[in-house]
Length: 176
Image (tube, rainbow, N blue to C red; front, side, top):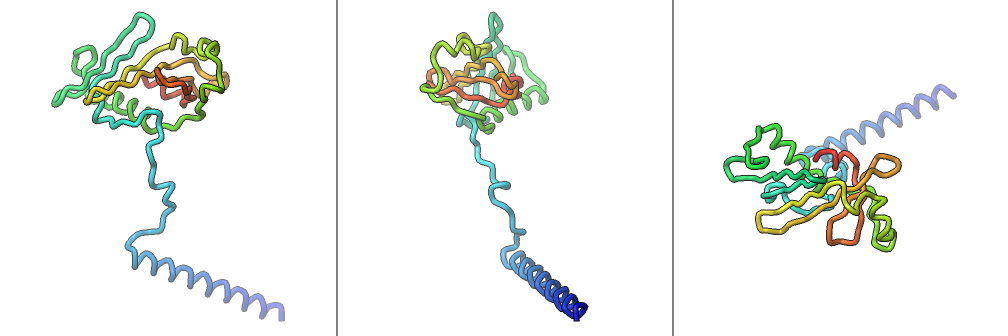
């Protein structure tokens, strides 16, 4: 009797599995697409800057006494201090901008969560380096990059003129 119950159960499981497969094939046949998990296939930009890489016309990097100017000329691509760059360097600049627009902050500190005295501890008074990113229309965002967090996995960043502090993935600042 136990063997008969096992066979009946196995047959029932097989029938249910076959019905599920037929249903899945039916969904694919009707929609023309394989069912997917939408949050994994659609990535929204969640970085600290909301701008298009294509609209960036000018970037100035300043650290201590050093200053580098990246400018984009239509038809020429990126220039560094007025000199043309190759496609590898141009791609690196585009990627670095894209990281600022797509990489989510690990944490955002409101002004009430830190004191002005802590800005020096975070490496933001003065910043280790500053990026001034200008769009074609003239809007410019200035970002101050500070020290790494004690865990070493994030870096303090501030959009100059705003009260919030951002903890961004450390590799973001290393791109510059």
